[in-house]
Length: 78
Image (cartoon, rainbow, N blue to C red; front, side, top):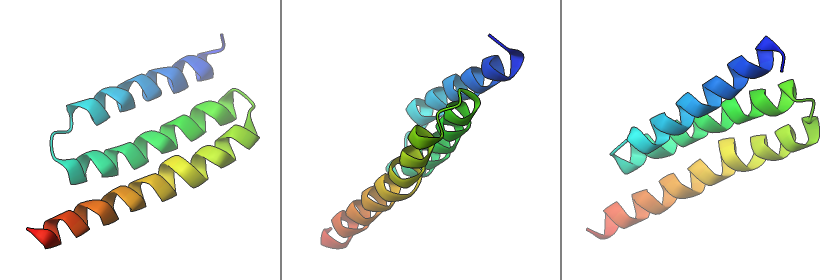
C-alpha cells in the first residue's frame, strides 16, 4: 500500500467517525456530504474514477439535498 492510499483511508475513517459523532441531524447531513468527498478522493487514489463519479452524484449532492429537504419539511409541520 502506498502512503497516499494510507492517508486516503485514514481520512475516510476519520470522516466516518465525524458522521457518527454529529448529533444534530442537519449537521450530520452536512458532514455526510463532506464524508462523500473523502470517499471520492479514496476512489480516485485507488484508480476507480467511475465509482468516484457515481459517489459524487449520489453521496455528495443528491442524498444530503434530499435529507435536508426532508428535515425542512418535517420542521414546517411542527
